[in-house]
Image 1 (cartoon, each protein chain N blue to C red):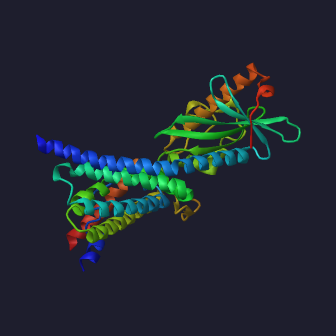
Image 2 (image 1 turned 135 degrees about the horizontal axis):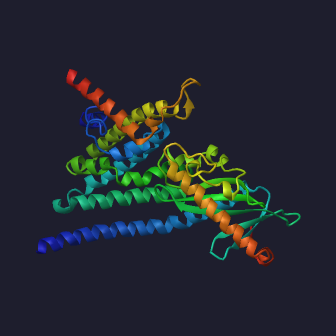
Image 3 (image 1 turned 45 degrees about the vertical axis):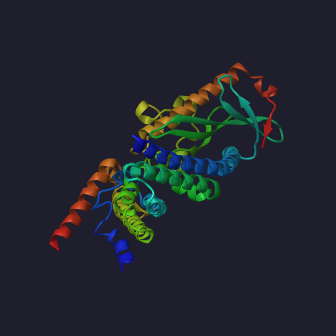
Length: 191
Length: 196
């Protein structure tokens, strides 16, 4: 009996050391990683809609999005948001840039853990190009009757990205149709 | 020289993929292209070296009954530390290798070598074993990936090497292609072994 208590105690000590070490290193690295992610997000947003000023906003359903304005005339030139849905192995996050007619200007997959060589190919430039110029009604994988050709061996990935964007575009459209004055009220400006 | 022979055995005689048949899961997943294979091989070799050294150091103080959970805790902590440090300080490297980090935790080569070698040998030989096994793993991955990428995508390390008219054999990139390639390569190695 005592023997097994001793074994448990040894295991407990080793786990405690490991957990302490991990917590310490996590404390060191987490702020750096967060800061870098935030910086990357701003850079991606600027790459999707170049030369615009971005204003943060939120739909009633809780989707964060940004209104892109022309810095001179303050005219709305487009919108960006992050669409997310589970793919084949974990969540895929895609940043999407729309023009003011809600057609896709460009997309960029910013976070994914899909299979290397198959689903992970969604980060390649050729994949993003498939989406350019499409509106929400055209956003469907070809197997579902839409215009996006599914990647070889990665239909699930393609479908997850396509549907996540489609849902958010529709949500954003509805939000802006119901609250056209939202723009005037929005306050916080980001760079 | 024991040190040298511990390194070279991992390349052919005790090759982790073709002979020991360890670590099949990451092998199937990342051998779709040569650059993925290299990334996985290098990341796994690094973790294997660290874990073999530490397991070899703690072998005297861990009771035999709980050695496996102890090794798993050590390996998982190590992998997580590598992941966090890399994400914070080497973001470019993390972008290309980060994908493989979760796969390394479940890579049974690392646990297999901790159990079969590092827990019974001194630190120096364990390090040699890790280097050899890591090199053998990387080499095998690259060989499998060479076949799969060339046949399935017509490229090698993302460079186009097949003639324009070549129509890629998609099955080579998909999971069945990995099993087929692996089967042929194992048969080849067994054939060479029996001839000796």
